[in-house]
Image 1: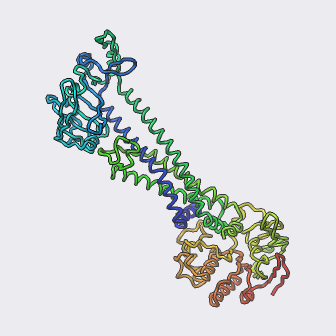
Image 2: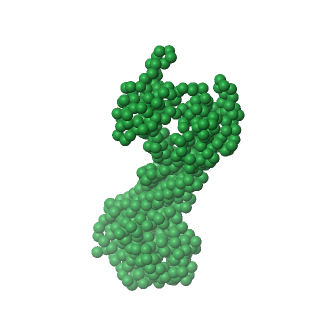
Image 3: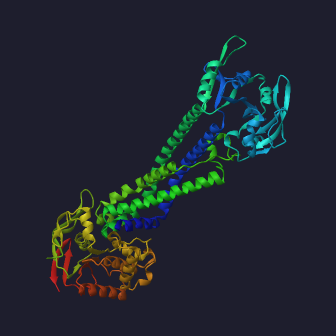
Length: 398
Length: 226
């Protein structure tokens, strides 16, 4: 078990170079910290997106013109509801508008209040009433930016052919609500229709159907539904299912992950250089140690084992600290300052719970790559020194 | 059979591209087991370099060094490590790791032998006790005085019970009483059959020597039994 005793001296050697050890751990932290934060936020977003898609409608029906999605006539919801297998068909309006003196961009969602009922536990105040015009529920981040509270009025919220309208904030989503609502305004379908001045249209119809009928129903809707526009042109429908939404999300997530990985590779390259520089600072002392060990009978492979254990411990320490600090930063401080690097819409101090999920694979990958970074800074130099006769090494290192 | 032997051993250092220094120049020496050799001579005469060659710390530029009848001049890294484990070497500059505790410095030769921590600590305690430093076991080596560090270096050379102890000026930085302790330890080693080779100017240490070899300008100018 000599190797075990040699490996233990790797722990001791950390004490020999406290500054080098600290600098190396700092390099690992700098390289691994942002990567884990990015991957953790990506993981959190993926989980929320999956839940959102799973909890959402079975099919999303929009119009289709010039290969793009366009609104559908409101009667589409009734026609779809009449199809066999459909349990519910709900029209929804989703549109963008700028509000406030600073013209903050917001997404307005108009839908029946009961569709927001599952979100009620995350609500301060109450849901809007379908019967009362101009009541709205605001996402937490948007409410913070616009300094809105329950009971606030937004004068004028919008302007249409019927004049200006003052709206009343009746509810604000809490900090703990899912991220997707953070920058949204929720209103009744009728209010949204008035807001965008499109009384007889919905941007999409949410279709709920019996289990196993989804694909057949999608084909049926595509085949049967089409309308004639006032100018005589034909309006076809586009049907999007859960599988397509999942694949769209996966594609966007892969792109985002790819950008993170690319940035991290750059960070790792810089970290390797930094570790090499820190190694150079203590190289004379290190050479002397290797010379002493060789002189008292250590073999090159034993010295390399000691150095590899030291590198492993440094990378494990750096990686563990990176995981811990990320967890504290993203859970305890809710990603203050760092979350905006990955989710720019959240601002410096996110007013919504930042989604964060760290899976074991990126952690293990991070530890492994950290070890490569740290090892590359020391193992080669140690090997070169260990292959030199100890007399030469001790003479050159004083 | 001699335990250590140098045959026409030469060590050349390159001071610059144009200038070479023959630190050891064609030295032949035969050291029988259980004897005590004192290498004497002025500074720069090649005593330390010859000790390094005999202790497998350096390779000769030409010539051969034999240990127990086998040439070690061309041994592999593993082979040389095996030889070094059977020798104890005391460096003139002590060659300690100053941040490590005294006992850790002393016990490092035992680590590759797989000896556990507790046994290493006991061994370090035992050998350091011979030099009157048992109470400094857990102090960082860098906090010790020069004389104390020299004794720690000696303890490290002895901890693995080597067949040959090679020491470069082992009493150089010691006061009268510490030097007496070291000489006493060496005397005991000799009594136990350990071979001793040291470079020294210390007259009291010379009294232990069974053979004296005098060096000048890298050459062996005289060699005699006492």
